Structure formats: structure tokens, C-alpha cells
Image 1 (tube, rainbow, N blue to C red):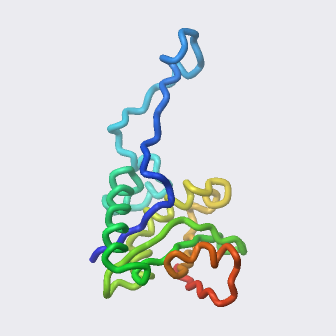
Image 2 (cartoon, rainbow, N blue to C red):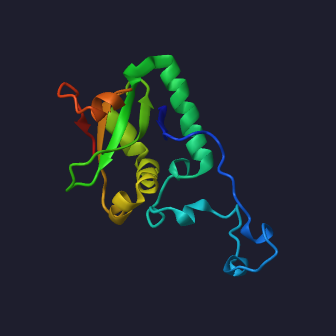
Amino acid sequence: TAMAFVIPVSNEKIARINLSSSSSSSFKWDTLIDRDEDEDEDEMSLLSEHFVAPEMQYNPRNVGRQNRNFVDIRTAGGTEVTNDLYVRQPKSNVFWFVGKIARVDGVSVPACVARQYPLIAQHAANLRPLEMYPHHDQKFEFWAAPGDSEMEVAYNRPDLQMTKIV
């Protein structure tokens, strides 16, 4: 089944700065051991202590693939097959927008979120580190709104229906 989660960020690569080569003076940074870019990025995952299917690990390759899948599904099906996804702490009234999901016929919104939970939860914790990271060991509470309804949510429209997923 085809599902996709798109993260609300630009597709531009993040530039890395080599601090030790930018100046001839010595900094504490010079004594740090550089992380090899080819090392398994799963080490840094909040969910690394739990098994995460390789295609759902939070890394640039999977995020890019999810973005392409989202665009393809949305192009074919329109906003009817998409939902905006929000996350909140169970004891909070604040909902944080974390991205959009798209699914094909026969795949429910809860099934789509459940399959991609590790990827989405990691992104939520990265996106809102002060609010979500302290709760990374708990299940996040996900809510879905109709596709492209960010403004209705922001204006707290009473006719907008949000559905609790997890």
C-alpha cells in the first residue's frame, strides 16, 4: 500500500560548517571527534531503543522518499486523499502542526499514521524539542484534519472536524 508523510520544510540541503577550518586559531571544537556522515543515523533517533522498520527511520533518504510519494499521491487524488496532521501532549490543549499525510484507496487515516508512527513521532520531537522531546518515551496523541485546512485550524473554526488518531 502507498502512504506518504510530508514534512513542512524546504527541500534545500542544510549546509554544514567546518568550524576548525574557518579560522587558524584553536577552539574547543578542534578537539571534538567528527561524526562520520556514513554512520548509521538511527543512533541519534529518539526511537532507537525500539525496532523501527528501515523505511520508517528518520533520515534524509526516507524523508525525501516520503515527500515524493506524498506529491505523487496528492497529484493523482487531490486534497480528498490528504490530511493535515497535528500532535499534542496528552495533558495539553495545544495542537502542533507536524505535516501532511496522503493515502491511496483502501488505507484509512489511522492505518497510515500507525505505519509511519516512528517517522512522524521523531519529526514531531525534532520540530518541537521543548514541548515534545520530554515526552518522547510516551505515545504522542495524533489528530487529523482535512487536507489543506491549516488556516481553519489556526482560526479555530467551529465547523472544522478533527479526528483523534492515536
